[in-house]
Length: 137
View (cartoon, rainbow, N blue to C red):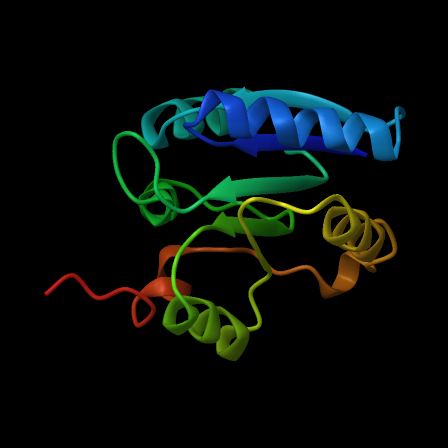
């Protein structure tokens, strides 16, 4: 399994990577990215990973802006410290998320879910999935 972590808080990214390595040393974190611009560039120039952990609030924009420029076909787990209203919206759209700080037991369950998830059920993520989650008024 190859994972990309998109997180602008260095401590949170290192912590998540460390927990992933503790859970399964065979899982490879192939990139840790900090911004929308850097993420777009990385995905345009690299093979897609198995799974992406994506923080909602990045240093240069909301992470949803990534999907205005590229499509990502692999599963994405959003990481967020946002309120219950936002997480309810994720549940309604059937988008996976994890509340920060991430708890190791929850991370184990999430990795196992995606390890066993049939590729035929994976969906391509694009900007249209988020239009009604966070409207900019």
